[in-house]
Image 1 (cartoon, one colour):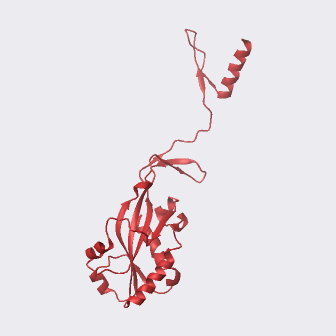
Image 2: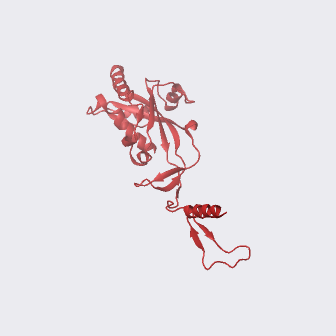
Image 3: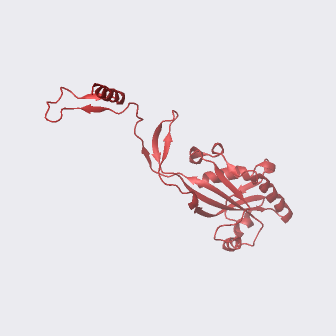
Length: 218
């Protein structure tokens, strides 16, 4: 699921004004060694935090339907996880980095929601839209200063990008076939009476008609 979110973000971060610019989108940790090796402008999206969004957790089962809208399987609801990315721009001058960040921000601001049609693989198969937030109030336990300190680098202008994505729950359970007939009542001998030669199946409307006839005779 995470690699599928990366795939969507790569197209999203490198789109808009950056389309065809040749600027790469990297998901590597922006350490000192990494920054020393780069030789071209790069937009970096470092995944620094993964945690479940407890408020979205659901109980029970979700029906899985086929092309005829018939329930064929049942499974647990997906679990939602907040994927937090540290988005930075890397060029030779701060001014160029700021221009890159502005272009990235312009790409992200209109995209508050990614529809299922835009999502690949198992993520798209769930048929759920996923929310995207950028440069909001940081709610994770780690501060940006702590993240840069752990990476061994100096504090750098960045965008905090959070994608809340569903993770498919397994296993799936086969559902029984759909009910196509009404309930049946089978009558046999009672109170010492000899059993009937064969049991008869009565449909609900037949049982109701028989009861109405008995009441009329009384």
